[in-house]
Image 1 (tube, helix red, strand yellow):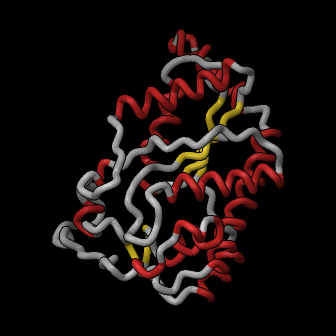
Image 2: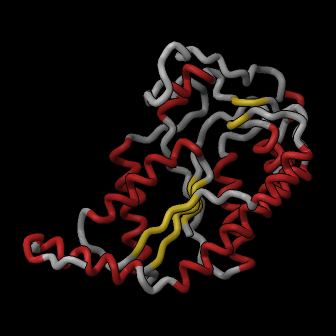
Image 3: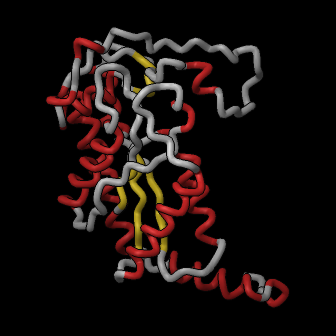
Length: 248
């Protein structure tokens, strides 16, 4: 597994590496349930939308792709043929989905899987019952609670209200269905979405442990998967001569 985060502002109350810490902890707990090798801290993520905030480390897009690609290739060269990208940062999602798509660009002898682990419906219900707020998305009540559960020494709760996490909706004049890179900034220029005042370690423990259990189940499924690499080999063979591809 490669737990992926990013270095970015998380309100005023959380450390810049929050996503790295949480992705790593979810992966660690999952590996205790279903053994898996965990790659060291991977903090190179997509975060161009927060370049206006201090503390943002926004590597160039070509470096991001190359670093992750060569990491996967090196892991495979060392004999590990199934790699799970475990995402802990929302801004990585589209990038990692595309990264998985370009695995079909050229033949390789390993498979890359991608997930952003979520909690089960039962755990989500418990979290909802404990929450005092209903909005969020970044450095909010749940994410702050997660850090209170795993690294309370890095959380400064007295700063949770020093900036607003309100959605400013500055592009609400545009119809739904249009995507813009500037949309997040139009909503949350403080790079804080929600209200973390009521964060507590109980919510955080439910969130971290719930995601770890989901990930453990995925690890088990990947271990048992004997189809993906076979399909890749079939695909690359057919791709060499498309006119000879047989209907299946």
